[in-house]
Image (cartoon, rainbow, N blue to C red; front, side):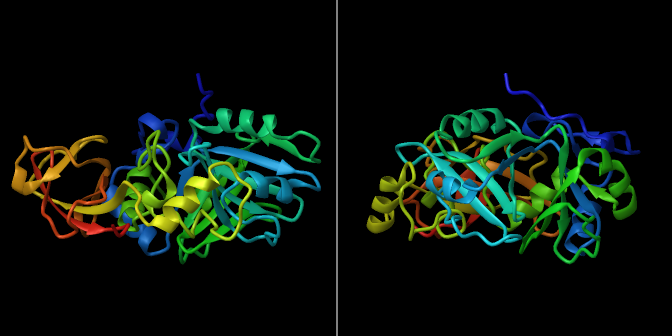
Length: 326
């Protein structure tokens, strides 16, 4: 069984409601998810991601070694520049997603909480004669996300990933409560997930299953560098890129707002013209309530689903916007 990260001290704040499932250990919300979304959009507050795994790789060969394993070009990664990267199976299916930065001496990466032990085992198995040290730092460090536009400071000595969506801080876990108290208010995972879905950003374990390849969810270019080779699964990446025919594609859905309940992960997607008993053409990956857009979702559908076709999610009407072109 995967060892869980320590429970966040921010769950003791007034109004905090614990998240469930893969986000267990942090707050789903602190009383008002829509207010929390608005605050993040305005560049205020932070998101407690202290349930995520934190892995470091140090040593003289860290970048050249990771370059051989990851889909991203990191052999010459400058200090302070963020990178997203994947580890694929031999058949090109996504197994791990790493969100990393090098601070000049150490690569810091955060990963999905239920993948860190398997990832650590894989990395350790690939060390061979390379001068690298791999460590699980989850018990000592907590990931904190500051939204784009935030003016909250980064404490001295803290590794930080700067991205268009904001900054991810690798904060000493013992400093989490004080930092949130000074630079909050915190927003929960419901708010963070709503903004993630709005931005069409896939998440491992939500928009992926055991056979997902990077092309299907739009990760070519952002997490997969097409000008490098020598990583596991590269042949599949190159073949599908050259042929241009991934079997599925990610779509963004506007759901009928009259429904009370959001569709669960895995809810079938069908053509509206076929009705609720028609042939399943895909499934919902993440459904959320957005403070402006209402109920929205991401879904994986077959490549040949017409891009302008009205859809049904279970029995709920949905209009689609392509994230990955067929």
